[in-house]
Length: 220
Image (cartoon, rainbow, N blue to C red; front, top):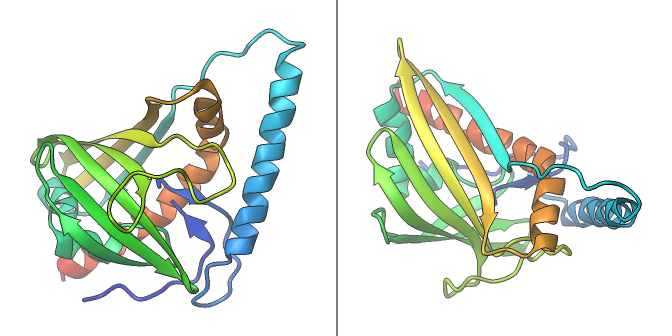
């Protein structure tokens, strides 16, 4: 079962997102670029303003909690095989292909995302895996050979983002919590990441909608 293209303007990497347009089978990359330019302009304004104000407390990063009507073993296994992973991971409106998949601590998953004639690549580097309970990995943009690269969007985004996923089950409902933050990043990259967490939350929302649909399908 290969996931078909969906109507949206969402783009997680974790994932960066813009609002839905209602147009079918299209990712509006120019609209995404415009959105990012607006974000960059706001970051510049914030940096200028901060010189005249006391520095605000640092944001703690990204945190999203989502519930699924499925046992946690099934939710975990959606991350654990290339066949399952390829059905739902990625931004709504993109087609994902798994290039390589090595689901173990120290392993890597390399994948390709396509939409509206554009191609992008992503990389997972797995750090800690405890079946059905915990998954920790570093997520990055990548090239076709699996090398880490800078963001293809016009912003100084971190090269590496650490993500931790925990799963808890109660009465057949699994609560997934994902928390993420930049690592090995400059102060400017951390500021960029913190500035777009709302967009990333929306992007992950679209991705987890796809996970929800996948889980419903495999439980039929």
